[in-house]
Image (cartoon, rainbow, N blue to C red; front, side, top):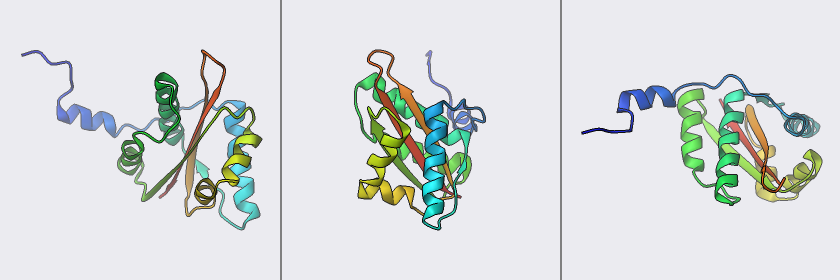
Length: 148
């Protein structure tokens, strides 16, 4: 019998791999600054960026683009990965779609109680991805938070 899937030990080893490289675009870098500036203005700790979280966020953006959806599908799998790989105790996620600037996405998040709660949450680290759909130029945003 021939199989195209990995055996469980290989899959488990692959799932624990930490992605250490991520190239931040201007919008992503601006959002990191906006989030941390906002948190500090509220007396909260700034969040440290972890590239692996940004990579998982980017994977979700690709999923949303490929499936023409804007949702939190497979959040539990992303969360579980961050728990296993990074030792996260708590995970949160914000998404957004079709905002042209970092400032407009941040404003929308702050005007939504659940998204604002994540930005103000008891977290220590974050990752972010803003991906442009090559077919229509619209931006997809995924921002994940963890507490370690």
